[in-house]
Amino acid sequence: MKTGLRIDDVAKRYGEVVAIDGLTIDVRPGSMIGFLGPNGSGKTTTMRAVMGMVRLDRGTITWDGATIDDKARSRIGYMPQDRGLYARMKVREQVVYFARLAGLSKAVAAERADHWLDRVGLADRADSLTQELSGGNQQRVQLAVALVHDPDLLILDEPFSGLDPVAVEALRAIISERADDGAGVLFSSHQLDLVEGLCDEVVVIAQGRQVAAGLIRDLRAASPRRRLRVQWREPVGDWRPVIGSLAEFDGVTADVDLSADADFEAAMVQAMAAGPVSEIGIEPPGLDELFAHWVAASSLPSDPVDLGSAP
Image (cartoon, rainbow, N blue to C red; front, side, top):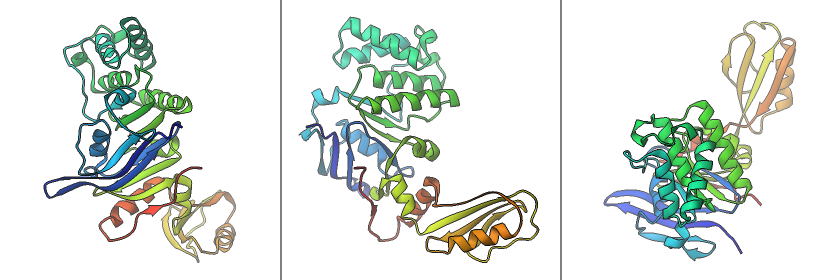
């Protein structure tokens, strides 16, 4: 039975610095997990540990219940935050080289290299030296290297960094396809709008510890805060809410912060009484607001938020 990647109670210290402290993550086949945290929180150390580049002080990392060996790692597509490319090698030769390292025959490696260079939009730069490419295009080469051997698991460290909007959309489509085809995907990113659009689940760490984990919809629903957003058809003067606190107001639109147990109906009725309304709704905080709250609270002694995984 395929259970995917399990990172179980892992810990790593560098002298007095705690890089990871008791972290557990499950990446099931076909799932896409957003791995979030501020700089220096332990994301890259965790990903390198999966690839055997970091020796852990405690904990285990398994794939389908077995310890990950070199053969298993050949079925992982790894995209490091710091590019691991040969600057003086031609682009196509580079992708073929890494495909061969993963065990593909020469003919298959060449075929797969051409396919993925086309998918990432670099078919016309196949004979260019890697060092001649822009930073964003080198990032595309790195993605082609990670995908060329059709891996069962993708470990992507800041894959969207440095990409233009067209390349971002291409990458979104590619990793969504890989998850739909059954590959597990664990990726880190500071672009929380992309994470919220791509993932059902997130794991958030700060100072090496997990501070939140679970389905995004459940984490949002569990927040004690809500926001009322109102847009009137015409200016309503110096309006003030009777429930909650006014976060933003320009005379035509308003954002009101409320507690999750507030009388939402009364708040909406009062807003609509001020004038004709074109839009109105109440939502829990977005992932960006929740992330800022979790990170700010991470220095306080508390238990991590854990609402479980998708069924």
